Image (cartoon, rainbow, N blue to C red):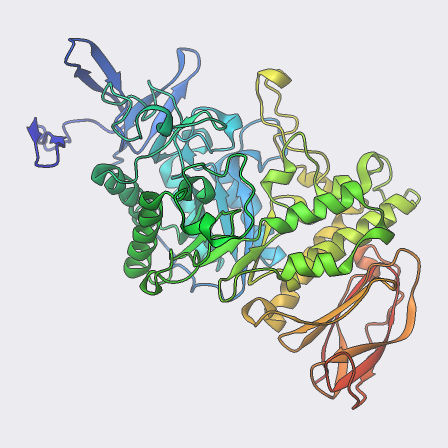
Length: 587
């Protein structure tokens, strides 16, 4: 083997005499090394493209040389970068109704058409990079260049992405460069026998909460490894971008553990900042945006780091979007701790609109974090055990189910319309998926019962889940027509705490929410951005959305030229309790 100037060893294996590769396709391979003390160690190649597991032999993964004689033939070009990004966060393994691990081919055939019909233009695929422990949700990566073999072959993942592109859907990878699994036999840990080849040595190289290893971003070879990892998924699999996991942990030496960010700038630019990690993120974003102008990058950060989503050329870190992580916390806190009449519209509006100027945000009311065992989805917080007994249209519409359906729609729409420049939904939450998410593990006898998606409940025309699903689709289609995600932040003209009425306009459309549990209002004044006639674009109270049809979609609202709530025109509308309306100018 040859050693280059950076300390990297390489060996070239010529083809066999018959022209075939020296290592046959699908052969098991490993690296064996002898340490200075004479100890022999075996490792999986760090850059291997496929690893497999045979539990009948060992839980440890084997490296497989993947070099099929026929390469995948791509059929579709990637769609243009979406203007109003609507993300469907998905996990291939749970995307089946059966109690097992779902497959790439099943996702392609069964789930992609659902996503397209719902109106989402982007998919964020979780748990793709190989992870030995399925229950880690893909966040304990062992082989960074290997797509998880538990879902199928690399070519089947390519077909999934290719098919999504053919449907006009952008595909993002949930990339984990914030840490790595501590596994030694099938991970990067102690790869060369030391604890510091890829990671910081000692305490700094270990995450105390995640029980994982932390990369040394100041190392040339580590940076080369991670940057190559990004290019690999862009080139080989034609992903369109990345959602970077755990960015807060990367950017701070304290990793955000037990640290309450106050917003003081010394927290962002003081001694607690990991400058090497921030430089890595800047280089990664700069490289991606220079090489792939259509790329999308999203940061998961709870700290509120300034300039996170400003270009590197301006001194920013270079992400396109940041996740608005305070929004789901607000909704869950309200549902857990406050009665409906105690909801403060001022606090809701503040949380939805509190974002860094000129730094685009992705809003969401719940993601995979809220679905995990120990927490509840919004639908489950709202309707709880009655979801098991009263979701049939043949049963009585109870007060709990009626409230749950209404608020589920309103919470999602106000978050979508006011919360950011993009929107995210976790697989199944669009129809109020019942129960929580719990992967097979020792604590549940390795059960898959809660590690699946019950598509059967939304496909059953006798169950009320279809109402939420249809509203979610209509909401996304309405955004396509109005384009509010690609417009400046909404102008909030009205938030009346007593009436529980909230109104704002964005992209020329008028959004009206009556959160009151019992009071409906006739001839309620709502400011509009310009004079003329307005009509209903979306009405959460429609029958086929599980509502009561108290508002006619044929209604036309004429503006009055008089100053009201910060605008020069107003209309008067009937707003039933627990109803949301979108009004647009009539043609």
